Length: 276
Ligand SMILES: NC(=O)c1ccc[n+]([C@@H]2O[C@H](COP(=O)([O-])OP(=O)(O)OC[C@H]3O[C@@H](n4cnc5c(N)ncnc54)[C@H](OP(=O)(O)O)[C@@H]3O)[C@@H](O)[C@H]2O)c1
Image (cartoon, rainbow, N blue to C red; front, side, top):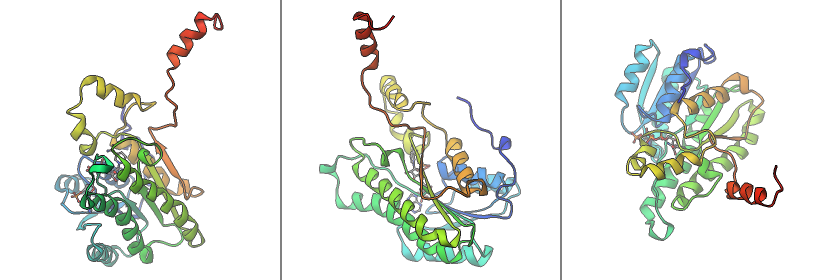
Protein backbone atom coordinates (compact mmCIF):
# COMPACT_ATOMS: atom_id res chain seq x y z
CA UNK A 1 0.00 0.00 0.00
CA UNK A 2 1.37 3.42 -0.95
CA UNK A 3 1.66 6.00 1.82
CA UNK A 4 1.53 9.72 1.40
CA UNK A 5 4.83 11.03 2.74
CA UNK A 6 4.63 14.20 4.80
CA UNK A 7 7.74 15.50 3.00
CA UNK A 8 5.71 15.50 -0.22
CA UNK A 9 3.14 17.74 1.34
CA UNK A 10 2.77 21.35 0.57
CA UNK A 11 5.05 23.07 3.08
CA UNK A 12 4.21 25.85 5.43
CA UNK A 13 0.41 25.91 5.36
CA UNK A 14 0.46 25.96 9.17
CA UNK A 15 3.45 28.22 9.71
CA UNK A 16 3.00 30.22 12.95
CA UNK A 17 -0.31 28.46 13.60
CA UNK A 18 -1.17 26.84 16.93
CA UNK A 19 -3.08 23.56 16.78
CA UNK A 20 -4.66 21.72 19.71
CA UNK A 21 -5.29 18.00 19.14
CA UNK A 22 -7.18 15.85 21.65
CA UNK A 23 -6.24 12.19 22.08
CA UNK A 24 -3.02 12.15 20.08
CA UNK A 25 -1.80 8.58 20.57
CA UNK A 26 1.58 7.61 19.11
CA UNK A 27 0.35 5.19 16.49
CA UNK A 28 -3.15 6.58 16.18
CA UNK A 29 -4.90 9.09 13.97
CA UNK A 30 -4.23 11.99 16.37
CA UNK A 31 -0.48 11.26 16.35
CA UNK A 32 -0.42 11.25 12.53
CA UNK A 33 -2.33 14.55 12.43
CA UNK A 34 0.13 16.05 14.95
CA UNK A 35 3.15 15.02 12.87
CA UNK A 36 1.58 16.09 9.59
CA UNK A 37 0.60 19.57 10.82
CA UNK A 38 3.97 20.01 12.59
CA UNK A 39 5.72 19.13 9.33
CA UNK A 40 3.71 21.90 7.72
CA UNK A 41 4.89 24.40 10.32
CA UNK A 42 2.36 24.15 13.16
CA UNK A 43 3.02 24.50 16.86
CA UNK A 44 1.24 21.42 18.21
CA UNK A 45 -0.42 20.99 21.59
CA UNK A 46 -1.65 17.48 22.42
CA UNK A 47 -4.21 16.81 25.12
CA UNK A 48 -4.98 13.30 26.34
CA UNK A 49 -5.07 11.25 29.49
CA UNK A 50 -1.67 9.59 29.01
CA UNK A 51 1.46 11.30 27.72
CA UNK A 52 2.50 10.09 24.23
CA UNK A 53 6.25 10.24 25.04
CA UNK A 54 7.54 8.94 21.71
CA UNK A 55 5.28 11.24 19.71
CA UNK A 56 6.50 14.27 21.67
CA UNK A 57 10.09 13.10 21.10
CA UNK A 58 9.41 12.88 17.36
CA UNK A 59 7.84 16.34 17.31
CA UNK A 60 10.75 17.86 19.24
CA UNK A 61 13.21 15.97 17.00
CA UNK A 62 11.80 17.95 14.11
CA UNK A 63 12.57 21.17 16.00
CA UNK A 64 8.90 21.85 16.42
CA UNK A 65 7.49 23.62 19.43
CA UNK A 66 5.00 21.32 21.09
CA UNK A 67 3.35 20.76 24.44
CA UNK A 68 1.52 17.95 26.19
CA UNK A 69 -1.43 18.81 28.41
CA UNK A 70 -2.93 16.05 30.56
CA UNK A 71 -6.65 16.15 29.89
CA UNK A 72 -9.61 13.83 30.15
CA UNK A 73 -12.24 15.28 27.79
CA UNK A 74 -15.01 13.86 29.99
CA UNK A 75 -13.85 16.18 32.83
CA UNK A 76 -14.99 19.79 32.58
CA UNK A 77 -12.29 21.03 35.01
CA UNK A 78 -9.48 19.31 33.05
CA UNK A 79 -10.76 20.65 29.74
CA UNK A 80 -10.92 24.22 31.10
CA UNK A 81 -7.48 23.92 32.66
CA UNK A 82 -5.90 22.52 29.45
CA UNK A 83 -7.36 25.35 27.35
CA UNK A 84 -6.25 27.97 29.92
CA UNK A 85 -2.67 26.59 29.86
CA UNK A 86 -2.69 26.53 26.08
CA UNK A 87 -3.94 30.12 25.94
CA UNK A 88 -1.47 31.44 28.50
CA UNK A 89 1.48 29.90 26.63
CA UNK A 90 0.43 30.44 23.01
CA UNK A 91 -2.36 33.04 23.07
CA UNK A 92 -4.75 32.58 20.18
CA UNK A 93 -5.52 29.09 18.92
CA UNK A 94 -5.84 28.53 15.16
CA UNK A 95 -7.10 24.94 14.91
CA UNK A 96 -8.80 22.51 17.28
CA UNK A 97 -8.91 18.84 16.25
CA UNK A 98 -11.43 16.87 18.32
CA UNK A 99 -9.92 13.42 17.84
CA UNK A 100 -10.17 11.77 21.29
CA UNK A 101 -12.51 8.81 21.12
CA UNK A 102 -13.32 5.33 22.34
CA UNK A 103 -14.91 2.44 20.47
CA UNK A 104 -16.77 -0.44 22.09
CA UNK A 105 -18.46 -3.15 20.04
CA UNK A 106 -21.50 -4.25 21.98
CA UNK A 107 -25.07 -5.30 21.29
CA UNK A 108 -27.65 -2.81 22.56
CA UNK A 109 -29.34 -5.36 24.83
CA UNK A 110 -26.01 -6.06 26.51
CA UNK A 111 -24.73 -2.52 26.94
CA UNK A 112 -24.65 -1.20 30.49
CA UNK A 113 -25.11 2.44 31.43
CA UNK A 114 -21.43 2.92 32.28
CA UNK A 115 -20.27 1.81 28.81
CA UNK A 116 -23.00 3.85 27.12
CA UNK A 117 -22.00 6.95 29.10
CA UNK A 118 -18.29 6.38 28.41
CA UNK A 119 -18.82 6.28 24.62
CA UNK A 120 -21.22 9.24 24.46
CA UNK A 121 -19.37 11.37 26.98
CA UNK A 122 -15.98 10.87 25.32
CA UNK A 123 -16.88 10.95 21.63
CA UNK A 124 -19.79 13.38 21.54
CA UNK A 125 -20.00 15.46 24.73
CA UNK A 126 -16.19 15.50 25.06
CA UNK A 127 -15.85 17.11 21.63
CA UNK A 128 -18.62 19.61 22.38
CA UNK A 129 -17.13 20.40 25.81
CA UNK A 130 -13.67 21.02 24.34
CA UNK A 131 -15.06 23.16 21.52
CA UNK A 132 -17.06 25.29 23.94
CA UNK A 133 -13.97 25.87 26.10
CA UNK A 134 -11.80 26.79 23.12
CA UNK A 135 -14.15 29.29 21.45
CA UNK A 136 -13.06 32.37 23.46
CA UNK A 137 -9.46 31.92 22.25
CA UNK A 138 -10.12 30.59 18.73
CA UNK A 139 -8.78 32.96 16.06
CA UNK A 140 -11.44 35.15 14.51
CA UNK A 141 -11.52 35.29 11.60
CA UNK A 142 -9.70 32.15 10.45
CA UNK A 143 -10.10 29.62 13.30
CA UNK A 144 -11.04 26.06 12.34
CA UNK A 145 -12.54 23.15 14.26
CA UNK A 146 -12.05 19.67 12.78
CA UNK A 147 -14.07 16.86 14.32
CA UNK A 148 -13.04 13.24 13.83
CA UNK A 149 -16.28 11.40 13.18
CA UNK A 150 -16.55 7.94 11.59
CA UNK A 151 -17.99 6.20 8.53
CA UNK A 152 -20.17 4.45 11.12
CA UNK A 153 -22.02 7.77 11.49
CA UNK A 154 -23.09 7.46 7.86
CA UNK A 155 -23.66 3.72 7.49
CA UNK A 156 -24.94 1.19 9.99
CA UNK A 157 -23.31 -1.91 11.45
CA UNK A 158 -24.58 -4.25 14.17
CA UNK A 159 -22.73 -3.83 17.46
CA UNK A 160 -21.94 -0.16 16.86
CA UNK A 161 -25.29 1.51 17.67
CA UNK A 162 -23.95 3.65 20.54
CA UNK A 163 -20.67 4.45 18.77
CA UNK A 164 -22.63 5.35 15.59
CA UNK A 165 -24.98 7.56 17.59
CA UNK A 166 -22.03 9.37 19.18
CA UNK A 167 -20.42 10.02 15.81
CA UNK A 168 -23.68 10.95 14.04
CA UNK A 169 -24.12 13.49 16.85
CA UNK A 170 -20.73 14.92 15.87
CA UNK A 171 -21.94 15.41 12.30
CA UNK A 172 -25.05 17.30 13.46
CA UNK A 173 -22.95 19.38 15.85
CA UNK A 174 -20.60 20.20 12.97
CA UNK A 175 -23.32 21.36 10.60
CA UNK A 176 -25.17 23.61 13.06
CA UNK A 177 -22.09 25.09 14.74
CA UNK A 178 -20.75 25.96 11.28
CA UNK A 179 -23.66 28.37 10.86
CA UNK A 180 -23.19 29.77 14.35
CA UNK A 181 -19.48 30.51 13.84
CA UNK A 182 -19.59 31.61 10.19
CA UNK A 183 -20.28 35.28 11.08
CA UNK A 184 -16.97 35.24 13.02
CA UNK A 185 -15.11 33.87 9.98
CA UNK A 186 -14.54 30.51 11.68
CA UNK A 187 -15.15 27.10 10.09
CA UNK A 188 -16.29 23.74 11.50
CA UNK A 189 -15.77 20.51 9.54
CA UNK A 190 -15.64 16.78 10.19
CA UNK A 191 -13.97 13.74 8.65
CA UNK A 192 -15.65 10.34 8.72
CA UNK A 193 -13.03 7.63 8.11
CA UNK A 194 -13.76 4.00 7.37
CA UNK A 195 -11.48 1.44 9.05
CA UNK A 196 -8.01 2.89 9.66
CA UNK A 197 -5.14 0.70 10.84
CA UNK A 198 -4.59 1.84 14.43
CA UNK A 199 -4.58 0.17 17.84
CA UNK A 200 -8.35 0.83 18.00
CA UNK A 201 -9.07 -1.23 14.87
CA UNK A 202 -6.23 -3.77 14.90
CA UNK A 203 -7.03 -4.95 18.44
CA UNK A 204 -9.87 -7.09 17.20
CA UNK A 205 -8.61 -7.50 13.62
CA UNK A 206 -5.74 -9.60 15.00
CA UNK A 207 -8.29 -12.21 16.04
CA UNK A 208 -10.08 -12.38 12.68
CA UNK A 209 -9.69 -15.18 10.16
CA UNK A 210 -8.11 -14.17 6.80
CA UNK A 211 -11.58 -14.50 5.21
CA UNK A 212 -13.14 -12.12 7.71
CA UNK A 213 -10.23 -9.68 7.40
CA UNK A 214 -10.79 -9.80 3.62
CA UNK A 215 -14.48 -8.96 4.15
CA UNK A 216 -13.52 -5.93 6.26
CA UNK A 217 -11.21 -4.69 3.48
CA UNK A 218 -13.91 -5.34 0.87
CA UNK A 219 -16.27 -2.89 2.62
CA UNK A 220 -13.91 -0.17 1.43
CA UNK A 221 -13.71 0.72 -2.27
CA UNK A 222 -10.01 1.68 -1.89
CA UNK A 223 -9.07 -0.76 0.93
CA UNK A 224 -8.75 0.14 4.60
CA UNK A 225 -6.85 3.35 5.38
CA UNK A 226 -3.67 4.52 7.03
CA UNK A 227 -3.44 7.21 9.70
CA UNK A 228 -1.55 9.35 7.16
CA UNK A 229 -4.62 9.27 4.87
CA UNK A 230 -6.74 10.86 7.59
CA UNK A 231 -3.98 13.33 8.47
CA UNK A 232 -3.75 14.48 4.84
CA UNK A 233 -7.50 15.18 4.70
CA UNK A 234 -7.44 17.00 8.05
CA UNK A 235 -4.46 19.09 6.90
CA UNK A 236 -6.38 20.18 3.80
CA UNK A 237 -9.63 20.92 5.63
CA UNK A 238 -7.86 22.85 8.40
CA UNK A 239 -5.82 24.90 5.91
CA UNK A 240 -6.77 28.18 4.26
CA UNK A 241 -7.14 26.27 0.99
CA UNK A 242 -10.46 25.00 2.36
CA UNK A 243 -11.68 28.52 3.20
CA UNK A 244 -14.99 27.90 1.37
CA UNK A 245 -15.75 24.60 3.13
CA UNK A 246 -17.74 24.48 6.36
CA UNK A 247 -20.45 22.40 8.04
CA UNK A 248 -19.62 19.25 6.08
CA UNK A 249 -18.61 15.74 7.09
CA UNK A 250 -16.16 14.30 4.56
CA UNK A 251 -16.24 10.51 4.25
CA UNK A 252 -12.76 8.95 3.92
CA UNK A 253 -12.25 5.51 2.42
CA UNK A 254 -15.99 5.00 2.34
CA UNK A 255 -18.69 5.39 -0.28
CA UNK A 256 -22.41 4.53 -0.14
CA UNK A 257 -23.14 1.07 -1.50
CA UNK A 258 -26.06 -1.33 -1.83
CA UNK A 259 -24.37 -4.76 -1.72
CA UNK A 260 -26.44 -6.52 -4.40
CA UNK A 261 -24.89 -9.78 -5.74
CA UNK A 262 -23.83 -8.08 -8.98
CA UNK A 263 -21.66 -10.93 -10.29
CA UNK A 264 -24.75 -13.15 -10.21
CA UNK A 265 -26.77 -10.44 -11.98
CA UNK A 266 -24.13 -10.33 -14.74
CA UNK A 267 -24.20 -14.14 -15.06
CA UNK A 268 -28.01 -14.14 -15.31
CA UNK A 269 -27.89 -11.44 -18.00
CA UNK A 270 -25.35 -13.43 -19.99
CA UNK A 271 -27.52 -16.54 -19.74
CA UNK A 272 -30.48 -14.61 -21.08
CA UNK A 273 -28.33 -13.24 -23.93
CA UNK A 274 -28.81 -9.66 -22.74
CA UNK A 275 -25.03 -9.12 -22.60
CA UNK A 276 -22.76 -9.91 -25.54
N1 LIG B 1 -9.25 3.50 13.79
C1 LIG B 1 -10.33 3.54 13.07
O1 LIG B 1 -10.64 2.62 12.29
C2 LIG B 1 -11.23 4.75 13.15
C3 LIG B 1 -12.20 4.92 12.15
C4 LIG B 1 -13.05 6.02 12.20
C5 LIG B 1 -12.92 6.95 13.22
N2 LIG B 1 -11.97 6.77 14.19
C6 LIG B 1 -11.88 7.79 15.25
O2 LIG B 1 -10.58 8.35 15.21
C7 LIG B 1 -10.23 8.84 16.52
C8 LIG B 1 -8.86 8.32 16.90
O3 LIG B 1 -8.91 6.90 16.99
P1 LIG B 1 -7.62 5.96 16.80
O4 LIG B 1 -8.02 4.88 15.88
O5 LIG B 1 -6.42 6.78 16.52
O6 LIG B 1 -7.57 5.30 18.24
P2 LIG B 1 -6.53 5.43 19.45
O7 LIG B 1 -5.15 5.24 18.99
O8 LIG B 1 -7.11 4.55 20.51
O9 LIG B 1 -6.71 6.96 19.87
C9 LIG B 1 -7.73 7.40 20.69
C10 LIG B 1 -7.15 8.53 21.51
O10 LIG B 1 -8.20 9.09 22.30
C11 LIG B 1 -7.67 9.32 23.61
N3 LIG B 1 -8.76 9.32 24.57
C12 LIG B 1 -9.67 8.34 24.83
N4 LIG B 1 -10.50 8.72 25.80
C13 LIG B 1 -10.11 9.98 26.16
C14 LIG B 1 -10.57 10.91 27.11
N5 LIG B 1 -11.61 10.65 27.92
N6 LIG B 1 -9.92 12.11 27.21
C15 LIG B 1 -8.88 12.40 26.42
N7 LIG B 1 -8.40 11.57 25.49
C16 LIG B 1 -9.01 10.36 25.38
C17 LIG B 1 -6.67 8.19 23.85
O11 LIG B 1 -5.64 8.58 24.73
P3 LIG B 1 -5.67 8.33 26.30
O12 LIG B 1 -6.28 6.97 26.52
O13 LIG B 1 -4.27 8.49 26.74
O14 LIG B 1 -6.49 9.44 26.85
C18 LIG B 1 -6.06 8.08 22.46
O15 LIG B 1 -4.97 8.98 22.34
C19 LIG B 1 -11.37 8.38 17.45
O16 LIG B 1 -12.26 9.47 17.64
C20 LIG B 1 -12.04 7.28 16.66
O17 LIG B 1 -13.39 7.13 17.01
C21 LIG B 1 -11.12 5.69 14.18
